Image (cartoon, rainbow, N blue to C red):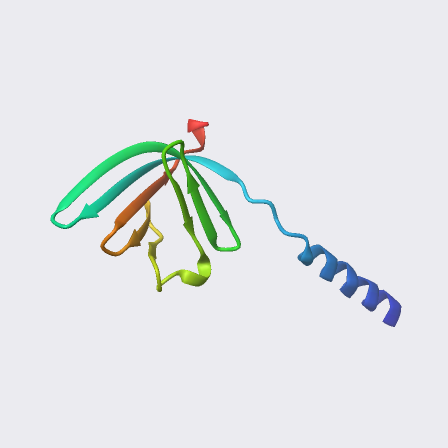
Length: 102
C-alpha cells in the first residue's frame, strides 16, 4: 500500500511540474493611448496568450506583457468583454477574443 501511494504521489508531482502549453487566440485589440488631454484610438488584429495568469498580447505593431505578479501594482485588469488592461495615464488595451480571425 505504501509503495502504491508513493508512486501515485510521485506521478502527480511529475505531472504538475510539466508546464501546460498556452493557446494563442486570434483577437481584435483596441488601444486607447493617453497623452495629456489627447486620447488616440487604434484598432488592430492581435494574438492573445495567457499562461499561469501571465498575459501576452502581440501584433505586427505592438507587444504587451502583463505579469500576474504585477496586477494591481503596474496595471489594472478588468475581466469583461472586452478584456481590459490599463496602465494608468499611459494606455488602455481592450482585447476581444475572436478565434475565427486566425
